[in-house]
Length: 130
Image (cartoon, rainbow, N blue to C red; front, side, top):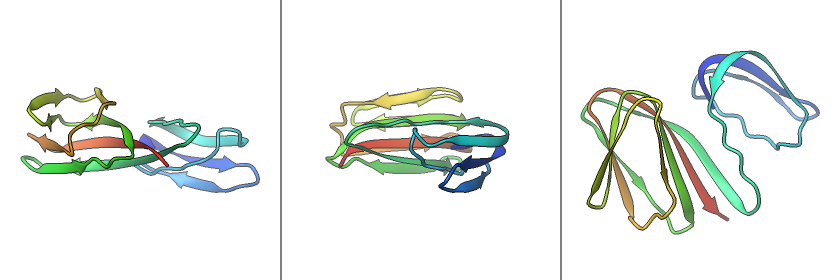
């Protein structure tokens, strides 16, 4: 996922794609890949019987967003690109500031509440078994 800047990424014998902020490209690690441009990116690499959902989430000031946890989900990552966000899980509350990464691997709660005190831009990664 591109966080800043932009690139054109090319995967030999597969596809090429222009990527701007918060665009995502998924590809196999054994593909011959090249890129033109300059960017700051956020990468996720998985192997085995795992599935990954990578997306961005913009939260407006004083808006709460729920993230539902399903039984197949094994890990959740939230990275703050812009703004801060309060993460509420059951009885706990955690403040995530710009440049910080939240990692949850034992997901017992059914829902996670995200609340921004000002405009926030987040990267959300859900890892699950398939």
